[in-house]
Amino acid sequence: MSDSALQVELVAADRLVWSGQATMVVARTTEGDLGILPGHAPLLSVLVPGVVDVTTAEGETWVAAVEDGFLSVADNRISILSERVEMSHEIDLEKARQDLDRAHAAGELDDAAIAALRSAEARVRAAEKAS
Amino acid sequence: MAVSLREYRARIKSTESMKKITRAMELIAASRIIKAQQRARAAAPYARELTRAVSAVATFSNVDHPLTTEPEDPKRAALLVVTSDRGLAGAYSSNALKEAERLVEKLRDEGKEIDLYVTGRKGEAYFKFRNRPVVQTWTGFSDQPTYDVAAEIGETLIEAFLRETEGDDEGVQGVDEVHVVFTRFRSMLLQEPTATRMLPLEVVEGTEAPEESDLLPLYEFEPSTSEVLDALLPKYVQSRIFFALLQAAASELAARQKAMKSATDNADELIKKYKRIANQARQAGITQEISEIVGGVNALADATAGSE
Image (cartoon, rainbow over all chains, first blue to last red):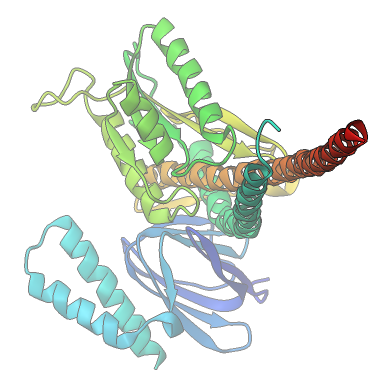
């Protein structure tokens, strides 16, 4: 039964970023990296800024950087919700690297700075992974 | 001639240039409204999935969260009024403000104090002119709101809601309820000012009755129900505010298009009227000149006839 593919929707606050069939989805939740294959039990989880890695039904992979959000799995339907989503090809690697350096240099580790650091890291990783 | 021909011509000219302006604004509003509707549509999947997730949590756990708890004796309410930044949109902003006033009246009758939060310069000016204190205003985005703005507004309102009503250490008072007044976009012809209560959240199973196939599966929550809820509910509020802003933006543009269309039509009418009067004046001038000449000739003829 688990041979049916996953129906994935990657949704940002202001647009639907990607939707389609996939065989595997890897995302980073508060509990750590989570891989989902078809037939996964219903799950609702909190995402942290990180990289979402999707293997499509055609065997291709794509990655995207997400910020805080949610992941819900039910009946082979996965929706990944995040306020901000950037597909790897939308990310300007140079700029992301600069952001990351700046976030590192800032030093001050309040919540906002950490969040900025994490999201910069996620974007750099997504962009590097894709290239 | 009451007013000279020249003056009528000047009026026609200025009305014509005014018409050009209103016509251009009508066209701009028309093109932007399509974009606004697209944005509203693009934001729909996020809101839908978020609502699904919230109702999933609500169904499978005893929702007991500060954001959903009804305060026992609500004393203070926050009111977010969504208006436009610019005028020339007919009664758009004043309708929203009227609805807001109605709600303020109602809440006062229930014995609640009101904290006002306003988006849009028109609303800001309205309350400033009346010397009514406004806690916070956001301006400059009314016709194309971004999610960031909605998130910021959401955070501010949630913070106010979670603060103690009696005031915290610095004496800043919180609120027990949060209401939002915005203009709902029904169609190009109909936009309704609507007042809804945002907080405390009433978790309902979506807006439509769930179909058989929609029966929610038994979710596992990671890391835990309460933590998922903690993360989920603020986002839900922000998404609702984003929805309100998008609806308001579409309504504003629709109202502006309608207002500008009637202004253009009215300018047409005026030009027609002025042209008629101007032609009349011109004709009267010609008639008068002829009768003056004829009268002069007659008088001359009479004079020469009399002398013979």
